Amino acid sequence: MSTHCPECEALIEVNEEVQLGEILVCPDCGVDLEVTSLEPFTLELAPMEAEDWGE
Image (cartoon, rainbow, N blue to C red):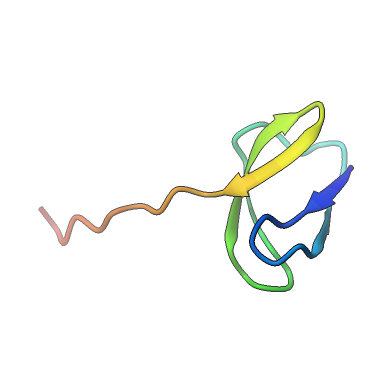
């Protein structure tokens, strides 16, 4: 399966074992991507996790 990075348009190819919700890293720009759909295979920018600063 393959699609393009929503940030830099690089081609992202994955094997058939990828899972919905999995976080991938774009090999070109390094952004975190979340698998949001398997049919069709779709990636979106992963949500940023807020720092809790030990709270």
